[in-house]
Image (cartoon, rainbow, N blue to C red; front, side, top):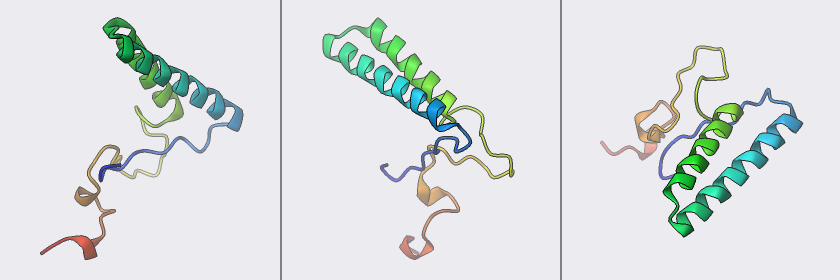
Length: 91
């Protein structure tokens, strides 16, 4: 998204656990949207905290879930990582 890398969910999660967490994430995002529409800053902060907690539980934020020593490029611009396409970089 917008040239940034985003970490995938932990593939070792059981499907039922992953789906429960995704459902919680979507509910939290709806809460944030509703709070923004009504201008309720307290509810928006609470919703954002729930979004963050769900993303951490999914492995999309927080400690890395892999153990091969590969660095975490989450939220880095692709062009600033080893994943960039050298053919697209102007000299």
